[in-house]
Length: 290
Image 1 (cartoon, one colour):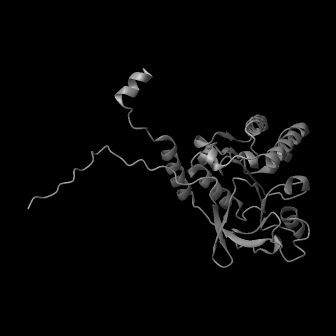
Image 2 (cartoon, one colour):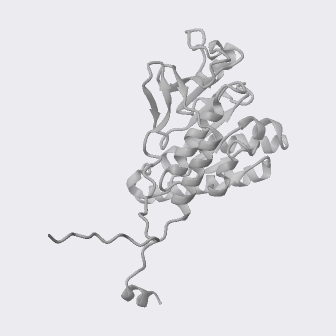
Image 3 (tube, rainbow, N blue to C red):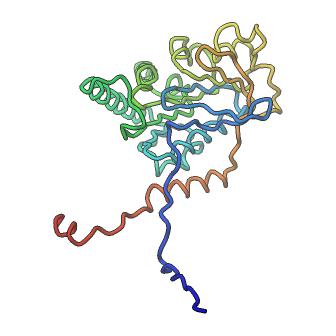
């Protein structure tokens, strides 16, 4: 009996595995009190994350950042004054801003101009928002420490401009695929004014030092109603209240990524973003292109 022999691919052959995620897909955050997964869609929503140091903000930001870089058609913009929280992703970012208020302002002005251009395009095409079918890149703006740029570094005028730019991008960016994810460890009214907080579709409160700080994130009166982030135990890192527009706060525990896991995701994201080559074009096509 003849033996069927299947030729093996050459050693250099590879299967081009691309990214399977999209920013229009739900982003995994963690699990709720009943062990059920918690997802949110961030393509058309913004998220404000706050709480005391060590509460778990960094873990949540890393989850969202990893999704953004593993998603197809994204150009994340990162602002991280500490450098080490989001610095692993710096080489892949559309723009990476460190502890430099001038760089931060220039970057946000550029994002604002892109936003204006996209709304002009939508108006010209009789549309109200960008969808996944449009093939337009999503530009997540991920800001690790809001207070540094708005109250610590730079002049009063620069700080005021920074807050004004963030407010504008948060208010107008979601319909044109520019969501904002911002975090701070100083939940106070001078850092998060009500006019800014209320336009974030999702708000996450990790452990806070006072009920008032909890309300600054979630909204006035929630702590008195029993949804008080100050009641979260210091030893229960990663636990937070999540509230959506018009909803009620709910407890969840954010998933945690170790440094080696983040570095592995960075390596994979680098591969899917930079290591793909198209198959060679037919000879006729090459002749036309010459």
